[in-house]
Amino acid sequence: MRERFRVVGGAHLVGEVAVVGAKNSALKLMAVALLAVGRTTLTNVPAIADVTIMAELLRRLGVGVDYDPAAGVVVLDVPERIGHRADYELVRALRASISVLGPLVARVGEADVAVPGGDAIGSRGLDLHAAGLEALGAEVHVTHGYLVATAPGGLHGADIRLDFPSVGATENILTAAVLARGTTTIDNVAKEPEIIDIAEMLVSMGARLEGAGTSRITVHGVEALTPTEHAVVSDRIAAGTWAFAAATTRGDIEVVGGVAEHLRAPLGALEEAGCHVEVTARGFRVSAVDRRPRAFDVATLPYPGFPTDLQPFALSYNAVADGSAMVTENLFEARFRTVQELARLGADAQIDGHHVMTHGVPMLSGAPVESSDIRSGAALVIAGLVAEGDTLVSGVHHIDRGYPRFEQALRALGADVTREPDDEPPFE
Ligand code: UD1
Image (cartoon, rainbow, N blue to C red):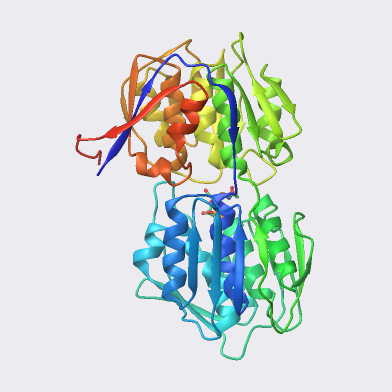
């Protein structure tokens, strides 16, 4: 059944909210578990549907998976012999499935992983993943929609340089290199906190590597890894969402479990725009009570730059902030679907190539809108909170992928948001 959120405008979100482990890390760490025979336990796992899809993919590879969403625990029992195929049906539902590529080539000497195809936020290539695995000695080709990588004699160390610090490519090369013979250096790697999280889990499994969080990772291959227990890193995108929610609604939110250090660019921008930002004992706090913060320019960049995942929230914020500003998307081409929906809410926003120019208005005007991905959906709900009247946000299943029980968290902060059946035909 399709659902939508009914958002009553005019809210100032006040209170505290908790963030747990990052979706973008938990899914990758589940794939990392494939590298060791035995029982690996992940804690601080978010309660989202994507974890269930990843669990299904791993089960089809022969792994025993026990997921307790309420406890936030996933136990993975990896047998000696595992499969090597990730079906299109699952990869298209969950792009993060491609993170099994590196572990499978390293463990099994073969991986057949469906090529994800276009998704709602622009095309994302796999060329860097493939080139990295080839450098490690794998043969890689695409056939019938599958990327097939084989290394029957095992992988060997190599010196690799990425043309772009891709998160996904860094992960797949790193998780293959840990079991390669000899030493691998990977230059111009992604520095995201999720990469550090994977590296820490790998080290706890017995991998030998250094440099995670810098531009160069060095890996000394080992024969085998052992299972581990690991807590997923805090979700910086969920935490950043609440920071923007506080700023946009001129509220005051303490993000318990949020790591301000992982959000330097966005929190720094909010502070400079006139919001109060403070690190607390339990996380951080953002408030903009009794003031209208200024609009600010944003250009998305690899970490530690402004995250592409927070770009839709910057748009909702700038739509009602004081003044004009430009948002530039440098990572993904088509990630501006939020703009046409914000325009339906009365935002003054124009797209020009990969830029969006906004002129802040004091208040938006409630209307039905459609979310096209996790982040745009959540950003539209926040926009609805600063719109006069009711905003109906369709496509709630997108939002559920990144924000467990989003409406409950919003209600605890004083918002009037309800989930209801959506009888309108889906927007095409
Ligand atoms: C990206 C984000 C990540 C975010 C995730 C979920 C960046 C750098 N990465 O990771 O922070 O959590 O989305 O939304 O912000 N590319 C290639 N060839 C490749 C791999 C990537 O050309 O082989 C290009 C992509 O088309 C894209 C860019 O590199 O323009 C970033 O890709 P990548 O970091 O790999 O994307 P994700 O891993 O999805």
